[in-house]
Length: 405
Image 1 (cartoon, rainbow, N blue to C red):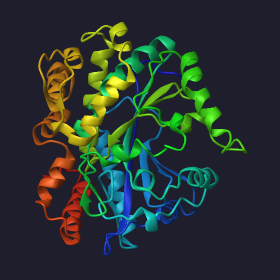
Image 2 (spheres, one colour):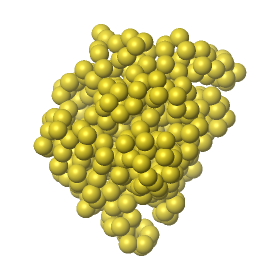
Image 3 (cartoon, helix red, strand yellow):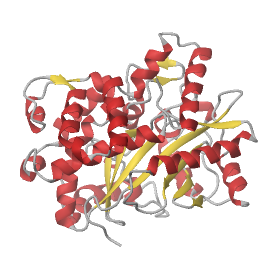
Image 4 (spheres, rainbow, N blue to C red):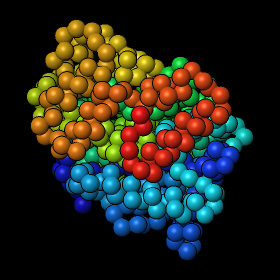
């Protein structure tokens, strides 16, 4: 079934399993699913939320079981599932941990690929790219799926999404530390994501999708080059271009949706949904052409947007945006911190957002990204003991669906 713009949504949240005592990643999602289901399956339907596996055996994904029109209580649904998973995990001394990267994981030695369904696909990915790296095996994100009905709706949505992508990590960055050290990037997940597939650059492009605004054009300029590039590596034809496309937002013509993938996972579903709601309302504003005409949105080249994205990946909400033409889009006429753009967007959309989400959005706008709050909590003490203490506090926030302060 096809839906119109903003009629329904799909939200996906990824979490890592860790062993409570050692704080190490625990590749035991298969045991969790068997515990819940009685037998091993790659997906567990749990009412309105579905659990599924990922590339690596320590990451579980929770997602809406089909499209939903209700974002108001979705964080509570996710929170219930998280509580249930943590109760199951407790029996084996494990727990779910939030944030987009495990701060102490050593991917070289600790990566375990999912060995069950789809293992053939994962093995092929591993052979081409070597998945024992932070960009593959130490990443957790939120994906937002947004529907479009036809080419005309795809054109509007894709134009709007491309414009918003560069500034999203200002809200969502939650990966400041790899292997016990600050990386110098507030969004380290997106920094490593950029070079993940350097062996086949056609797969991710510049992360900001090209200026393509119809299905035909998308196949010609994005999918066909990907298919050509992968051929020498995929002699059995087991990879699908929809999954190979790794841009920061991808068109899923198999289900008429655009999936946004540049969002780090937060400390709790309440925070994830606040970010999702602000992104969705900001996209509605762009699609309505209240800020800038569609033709002008389409003029933006990915290189110019990528330059802004790079700044935001490094500095998060403190990135200083100097591109006056970009700022003009949001009715800002002088250089400013990227968070000022989000505050402006929030002002414009506030009346359409429920009181519950307003409160949560305002918390993030005032207190900054989770990366900033993690670094503040660590107070320059990057000892293993202190990192564990701070991140375990975040694990409590996840279980209780509350903000990390």
